[in-house]
Amino acid sequence: MDSAEREKVEEIRSALGPLEPSEALYVSDECIRRYLRARDGNVSQAKAMLKETLRWRSSYKPEKIIWEDVAAELETGKAFRADFTDRLGRPVIIMIPRNENSKSHEGQVKQLVYTLENAMLYLPPGQDQTVWIIDFEGFSLSKAVPLKTTKEVAHILQNHYPERLAVGVMLNAPKIFEYFWKLWKPFIDPKTYKKARFVYTHDANSLKEIEDIFDLESLNLDFTKRYNHTDYAQSMRADDAKKKLLWEKANPCHENIMDGQ
Figure 1 (cartoon, rainbow, N blue to C red):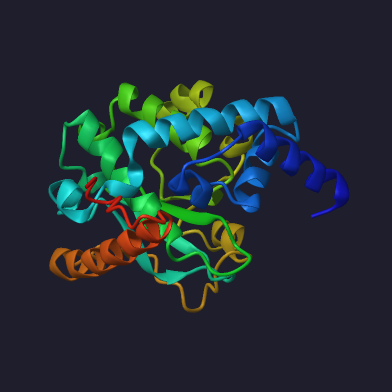
Figure 2: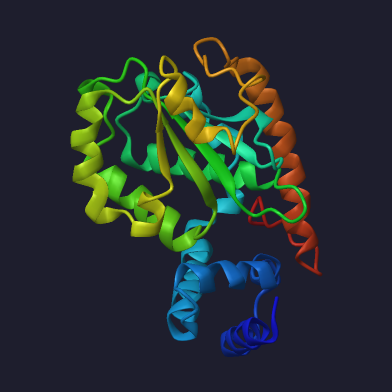
């Protein structure tokens, strides 16, 4: 961090004033830098954005979402953290639209927030971004997420998890998806929009689009049998316990933040 950026970080930290313990845990220097990058270095805009995120986190309480809250949404494996990382060790989130099993707007949003919060537990030192692979094999209109949900998800990701996405791999996207991609474009930040890479497993040339992200010789892009709900549930419960300890340590009075006691 150079002196100019340090000055901006300190200006925002000073403007935020005293923070609650859980807020202080969230608002690290790296966090502030992400908000600055998201707003092209504009201190005023980054500060307003971060303040809004703190209000959202206080209300929505993403750190309190546990596996049991989203298990039904995820039982088909429509979204999960992969058992592999990219070349930089960054966690990979897999999304499979054909496995959509819910019409619940609230449930769909909550499971996505939970999946992202979980992935961030696995960020290696020096990395603060995740990689997404959206497998569109078998995609149909009947499985498309409603526009209302898409808009809210885009808003949450862009405004409350800025600069958390490194690359979004659109795998085997059908022609019909191009219509939705254009439909969603107004709700997606231009920088985020440009992070999408369209890849087709039957096209060796298109696979080169991600050879800087993954070791293609060891990458298996067949996700048809990669999800076991029972095993994943066990893993998520263990991660919930890890997350609970993390947030409890933020409170000097040992308040049970995860349980709200």
